[in-house]
Amino acid sequence: MRDRTRPVLSGTALLAGALLLVSCAAGGRAPGHAPAPAGDRISRHSPAPAAGAPAAHRAAARLRVKVLQTLPHNPAAFTEGLELAGRTLYEGTGISGDSWVQAGPPGRKPTVRASLREPLFGEGITVLGRTLWQLTWRDRIAVERDATTLKELRRVRYPDEGWGICFQKDRHRLVTSDGSTRLTFRDPRTLAATGRVTVTENGAPLSRLNELECVGTAVYANVYATDRIVRIDPATGAVTADIDASGLVRADRLAPGAVLNGVAAVPGTDQFLITGKYWPTMFRVTFAPVGGTGR
Image 1 (tube, rainbow, N blue to C red):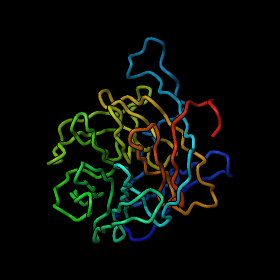
Image 2 (cartoon, one colour):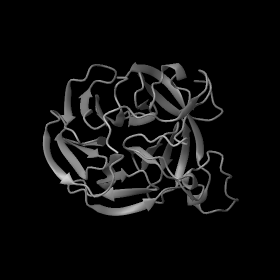
Image 3 (spheres, helix red, strand yellow):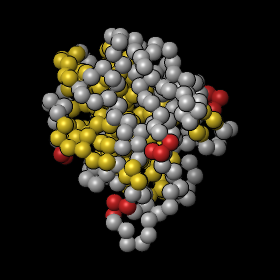
C-alpha cells in the first residue's frame, strides 16, 4: 500500500521512565512495512539453550542503551535509514510523495537534500565513499547518488522489497534486509545477490529485520515496530546481542506511527546515534550490559 498519509500503528506506551512498547498486534499496517505473522514473533525472554549447544544457538548478550547526548531530530521525518560518514550524517525517509535523503552535521540543519518523486517510497540508505545507495520499498528500484551533492546518478533494478542496507567494508559487500528472517549479501556495484543467511535468536528465526548498520564484522538491525536493536554475526546469522532501547522518548511526545528506526555508528568509537520515525529527538549512546550503571 502506498499512502501519502502518516501511518497509524496500534501501540501502548507506558509513562516516562517505564518501557516504551509500540506494537502492530492490533492489525495496523504502516506503509512500507507489514507486521510479521504471529508465529514469527520472538520473545525477548526465550529460554536459553542447554549448555554445550552450538555457538549459533547460544543466548545473546543482553545490553541496553546508555544515553550520552540528546540532539534534535525532525519530527516530520519518517526515518528509514541513518548513517554517519565522517562528520556528515545521512538520513533517508519514506512515504510516497514525501521521501527524501539529506546530509549535514548531526543535530543541525542539513546542508543538502534530494527528494524522490511520487510514487517512489524511500527506504534504507548507505554510503560507499563517493556514492550512496537509496533503496525503495516496493518500487523495485534502487537509486545511486553522489554522496556530496546527493544528485541522482543512475537507477538499478532491485528485485526484492527494500528495507535496510549497509556496506560491509572488510568484505566489500552490501548487506540488505526485506522484513523477513534473512539478510542478503549483494555486489556493491550491481546489487546482484551473492549470498543469504537466515537470522536466528536462540536457534529460532527472527523476522522484521529493518534498518541496518554494518560495524566491522557485525551487523546491527532494528527489529521493526519494537524497541529492540540486535547485533548479528552475518557468518552464521546468529543474534549475538539483544539491545533494549526502550523509554528514550516520553509517550506524550510521540506521534502516531512513531517507532524506533535509525542506527548509525559513530566512526572510531563504540558510540551510536539512534532515532525513530517521527521522533523529535536523536540520541548519542553506547550499549552497556544490563545491570550496569544507570543511564
